[in-house]
Length: 131
Image (cartoon, rainbow, N blue to C red; front, side, top):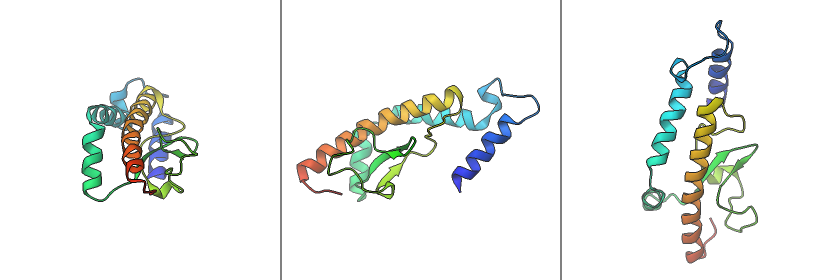
């Protein structure tokens, strides 16, 4: 459902009478991606992982590329999630990002997910418990 809303927002923005938007301020979705990128870049992966584990959440972070992937974890690793439902997907990532804001968000989200996932993977291997 959220993907449908996102696509309709992007379609409406690109189909507006003035053509393509010239400023991030004119497209609220793009401004939101920049805000979320700033927010993600300030998070400490180790602190966030500790809080997630304390609440019982042992899932890797995923990003949406052509398929959903868990950055920082090799596909062949036995700890790699078998299904996307086994990941917490960072909402707003895309294999077709919208402009500079979308590209920036994808880069920041992937870097954060990689740091988080590597820390989680280290912990899982120490416990030797596939999730």
